[in-house]
Length: 304
Image (tube, rainbow, N blue to C red; front, side):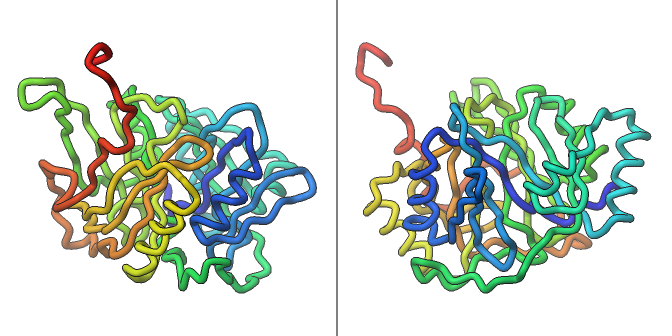
């Protein structure tokens, strides 16, 4: 089995790097730093970065970085890929240096999402000091947070993340946007070797940005409120109002990133004992709040 410990980082592309710098610093309260080649490294803990943004023509999500413990675990991951006859590409020295890891393997799931399996991060363990006074982001053994990826080829992609990447199913949600009589859109939530309810979710629909959303978590509720104030002050688009999820109990809101995917900013996510967890199909996304209609374009009667 492949033993992924958590979401190590995400990679995005942006046509407006200054906008990302301002968003990271002034809204998220993270520490942006631009390298000599123009890549933006966004720091939210002792790691050199958790978000990496590269300049380009598009505004989109590019890759999810998944961390294993050490070289032996990385070699085991390659054996799993070989045994499953899954094609992969070893990262060049240049790419490993860019991601600041010892080794890297790139695989794509059946829906085309890019996954980078990595080990051995380089870090000087410089103290994280939020420019907005954010006390702490919950990372460490739990990874960056979680990512929700589009999976229009749903069955094959679910099988890939379960049987190849080694994720376990946490819970499922069958979304019926048109009511009980309409079609069902599946969203499955997956955990890896940490206690977050999910580090990955797959949604049975395409996303032009390459990602549905990424979640980051803080250690107290006032930080969520302050982030909402900063979002409003910086005129960042709200994607969903404040609410609490049924499955992971996260209290959060959603906003648009400069790379067009959403970012969930939350507090209070459930910590799961997987030996005692029972998988559920939950029938509503949130216990309260989370009005996602605020993030949809307005339509007039003629367009409806």
